[in-house]
Amino acid sequence: MVFYCDTCGKELTVDEGTLSWSDDDNCIREFRITHKHDQDHSCAQKDVGYVHLWIVVGISGFIKFNERLTDYWAKGYTLKDPNGLKKALSQIGAYIWEKSKIQA
Ligand SMILES: [Zn+2]
Image 1 (cartoon, rainbow, N blue to C red):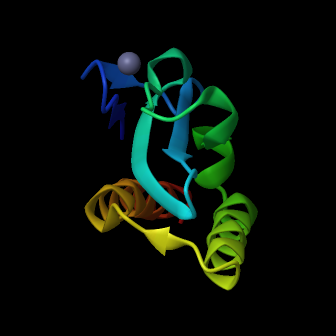
Image 2: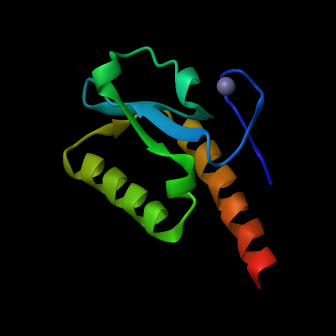
C-alpha cells in the first residue's frame, strides 16, 4: 500500500509523507498528502498545518487529527475544500484497512 504525492505525483512512503492544509482567513482548505518539501500551499508558511503521515495512519494519531478538526469547527472555521479532505481521509482509511488485514 503506497501513497502518491499530490504535488509531484511520485510514490510516497508513509515515513516521508505529510498531510497538510492551509488555515488562514478562518477557513481550512488545500488538504493534501505530499512529500514535506512539496506541501506547496498558497498561504503564508506560518498558516500551514500538517501532520506526519506515519502519525495520522495510527489510531491515536488519527483520533488526534479528528480532535484538531473539531477544534477548527468549534472556533467557527469553515471547510473550503471538502473534496481534498475527503480524498485524504479515504487514502488514510484504505491504508489503515490494508494494514489491519495484514496484522489479522
Ligand atoms: Zn512530492
